[in-house]
Length: 404
Image (cartoon, rainbow, N blue to C red; front, side, top):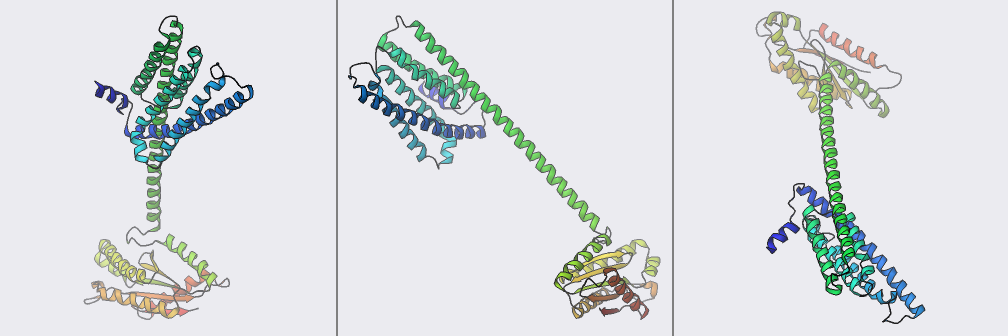
């Protein structure tokens, strides 16, 4: 029987419970207990000091009914509050203990304070009804301040009421106190209603917090999805669909960015414009599908060399490729571009449109400059383009370069 009462009183199982709610309730109760005990300790200390001062001024006799007879009860309440505060401080850093087991301490602390109200009531047999006021105050305050489940509220407050009424009957008997008992019972009922309503409000706020949290998570996921989609769209808009390297739009933006950046530091900017030799004949001979495959192979080979040298490569249009080499001097740029040309040559992609044992090659123009305000970017690119056509005129599969 006792085990069943204990389980009903302290069990965390409730139709409205979940583990997160239990932890929240115990954390809130811990904070509120700390505040309530500090408030009680302060009030008790003030009343104790005031009663001592009052008693010393008017020098009442101990056997008379006066405030000095109650000074030690409030001093006792002050001491009880301090001890309970020390206990709360001892478990302050034990977060898991508070979240799981604070209900035990919460109910125990309420019972301790209620026992004090019973002792206070017994301090004067003639004034027991008046002295029951702290009991009502503690009952109302506990109901409005702390969060207990419905079963815990009913059983805890019911036990408290039985103790108080039983002690009152022991002292005064039942006769001529019917109205007093009815008032106490009404106080109990109202306190239980307040406590249950208070607890339901906490559950409602908890549900609202969870709902808001879930909505925020959904919004975050949606924002992340949109961000990812926007990034993907941006990447797609900056890449050539066939070769998966930068397109002309990105190349124009990157060239402009490097031009302005390197101009501030007076550093070299090198570019290369390359074109696949006899690609029209290759396309006509093998068809567009094979032509696209050739473009992909060329783009991949160029990209491998350029990435190794911290540059940017993109498809400039048709069979033309554009390479940006920031912070590269003229000799380095020519060496890198020559490595690209040889790499394509070593791929030995057949081009039987030119005859047997003929392979795909590239021609390229290379230009290097230190950007200044007096020099135009478009003019710089045109000069590099002219070097490409010069390489074409001189027999293809070669590089023509210029340092400006």
